[in-house]
Image 1 (cartoon, rainbow, N blue to C red):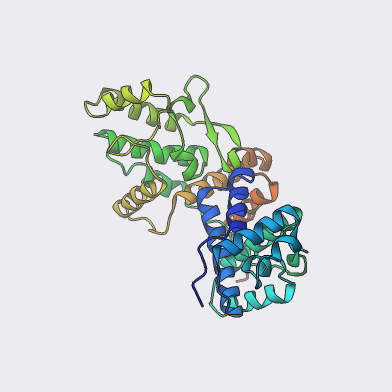
Image 2: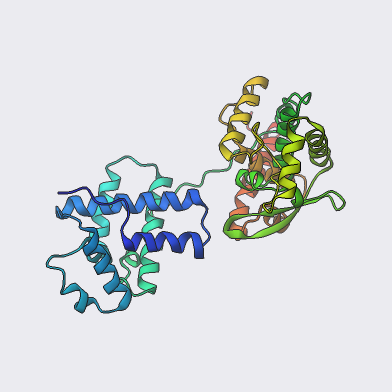
Length: 346
């Protein structure tokens, strides 16, 4: 048996659909690709078949053109592409049983099922597959995990951690203030450009998931932190020439720069956050997404309506935002039990 290729023409076409039509983030598209590769490897192990790239291309062309019989006649053995396309619910359940032996978390299992569900829905719609076996597969129920949020006092400790005596310290303060002030995702943060800021209207233009765009308000503390950062950035002997160069280029100028003058990465934001968490003695499991959760939770606790929070977070569905109401309700219950003289039995 030969090792299966990392991709097949049909999976390459599906990957293009995810990024170009569904506008999946590169990270999510990679996860879906990895899930499909695992499925392909399982099929190869089960069948013991050898995979020939030329045969797979012919098989996919046949599926694409609708002339399955004509092209399939030039191939003297079953192809992996045909095995994938003609898979039934029993084969899918065998794969899920194999996954169940790997001790994956419920969330990972749910994502792998979602990958196959998306793949076969796409394949069936384009008539690559004879049927959609995933219509007979149920996704296991997952226990709802409440998003983690930190207190306002903990937020204040974190925000005061960066040393603002230099450009990078001011950048870090501005980043943290922006994350908490707006609730944007870290991927949205590092994607910000200088022209996305609207100081006059105290707002910011954000490009979110699926290339959806929205305008979010910026609090005074975040605006001030960004202003202090950009002021020093423009006068710094190292960064000022880089900014001038970027201003003359056709590409947009990133707002948050690394020490080399390039756009900061999501991973770098995480490393900086870890550094400040250690310096002020906060839980090291706190992530940039925790600030997003805290933003939503604190808004709801202070009377914001759910629809407004949904718009600010860039959630497509209100049900996604509703999980935060459970968190704030839980805190209200805890406060009630602690404060009311007859809340607990003596």
